[in-house]
Image 1 (tube, rainbow, N blue to C red):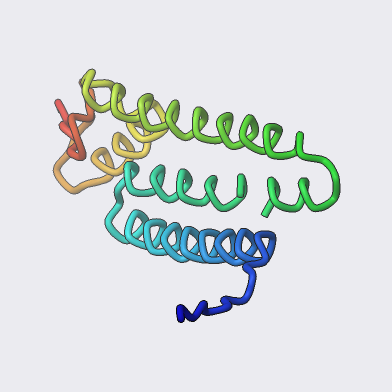
Image 2 (cartoon, rainbow, N blue to C red):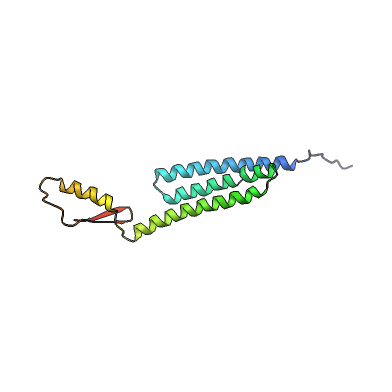
Length: 143
């Protein structure tokens, strides 16, 4: 005689809710670690990855909240908004990288402060020529 075990029926909605909660909390913690590492390590790439991870968090409580409230379209709207945030961060990173790679000036404000500092040193009669340029994370000065 075969015995059958009776397993409690799974409540699909509860399982989905629990999995979503674990996903949201995990991505929130992950994005916090990435943001901390990016800021302390001065890494634009890590900061943008933190934004990406956080976007997963937002796309998920908004999508779930929208579905629970009867507005499943909120998931798509949240995805578009997050996409725009990612594009903005991507643009900033690309702009910063291209600026550093193209050997661009440090800017007139920086050069003017530097000119005043140098002119104020003992033995300096004047500053005839001052050009600055950034290459990577270094500043080169022609004086």
